[in-house]
Amino acid sequence: MSLTVIAFWIIYLLGVGAALMTPLVGVLLYILIYHLNPEYQWWGESVRVLGLRTSMTIVIATVAGIVLRFPRFEKHGSQAPLPIVLGIMLVIWACMSMAWGYGASDRGIYMAEKIIKVMIFILIMIRCVREPQHYHLFVIVWLCGVFYIGYQAYGNVGTHISGRLAHGIGGPDFAESSGLAVHLVSVLPLIGAMFFLSRCWWIRALILLTGALTINTLIMTRTRNAIVGVIAMVVVAMFSLPRGYRRKGWLAIAVGLFLSFYLTDSGWWSRIETITNYKSDPSATSRIAYWGAAIRMVQDYPMGIGLGNFHHVIQDYTPNLHKIRAAHSTYFAGLAELGYPGFTLLMLVIFTALWRLTRIRKQASQFDSDIPVQIGRLKMRFHLGWHAMALRVSLCGYLACGNFTTRLWTEDFWIMIGMVCCLSNITKYMRAEAHVTRTPLVDLPMRSPTLETT
Picture 1 (cartoon, rainbow, N blue to C red):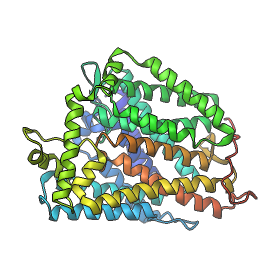
Picture 2 (cartoon, rainbow, N blue to C red):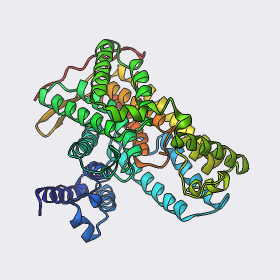
Picture 3 (tube, helix red, strand yellow):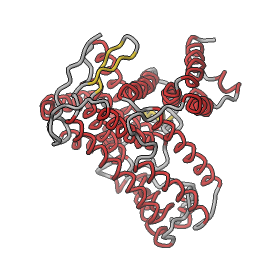
């Protein structure tokens, strides 16, 4: 038995046991397993032999821990902020949509089961991630998972087709190149925020290494929609940086882009050049045809064709197509499958999440700029404004990528919505904990963090 397998089982078993006492541990372990995807790793034979559903086991243990310990929202937090209420309404509508249109398909039933499980986890996550140190730990574990994915890619793990990392690494929602690229794009702002919030040199070095591995893996996927996401994030970030950090932030963005281009190769540029020559690219022209078909679908079925049905119905709307194909767009897939009411709910979820992040960032000026966070012997600082800004930039990049790939029911998207709700509750917690300064309630620049070193 390899050391990797031994380490996995030690972390997993201890984490499941700890979740019964501290449900937050279960949430963190779930995020780690979501990135590791142990059932499909070369070292995951023991998991496959046992037939263990690792994520489901963690959720059961975490729910048991919540029942036993019942972590409370001590400071007027909410179990169901508006984005989640709208999300639950969207899930209900999606499940009901199988009653009309083209009816219930095997894929639709599978998707319904998945989105219900995802929403259950988000509700658990909101209950457990309630304080600044909780959120800080959550982001750290998220970056640990991304670090492992980057390490795998650097070690040439996965399947490469024509020089492109096609699939074979990453969690179930991003095991193929397009999904992996979107996931990695959205994590870049989180890496940047954690770097600026750190003052310990070795922590910064680890964060920089994580960023380098992330960019390297992103380039290896050779995914074109990543360019759209990066451009969107750069624009949003440039106008969101705190005034005292704008020059440093813009310089960091410029240096990051320069180093990213330095890592590219001729194969990457050949792939990107097809964006301008999309008319000669069968993949691009077929997507345009699918989007046109989605519009015709919703015209014929205003209430939607039903959850999970696009893959099959597209053959009726696209001549000479005899394969099951995706919409390659989050928005067109949602419009076709859920109709106008479902699409409206989706837009409301996105709008309320971004609006809430903007509001949180403005409210950050009311609080102490830095709150001490101690994780074992590691001393760090939590900065509400930086975290809100980073998450908003991440979500904008993710949504921009969603124009060219279907991410409507992927777990990472809804986890980000859950993170918005967690930050909203943390804002209430900080206000009640009297981390309030005498600064008037206006959108003042966030003070630069002054963090301790270990």
